[in-house]
Length: 52
Image (cartoon, rainbow, N blue to C red; front, side, top):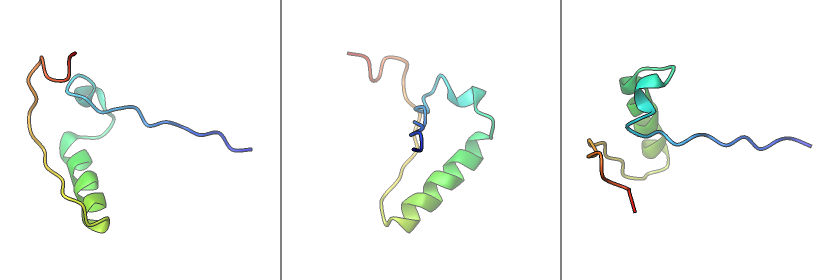
């Protein structure tokens, strides 16, 4: 039986520690969005966004 591996979320806090550069991640996500015919945008988040 194969194990399911989860991909950790990429946040403003984890992005700088990723093994690949930010532009490479953006290129990959843009390519996947193009292949799936889905829109994608990138923007900066403020520190308090996403907090409940």
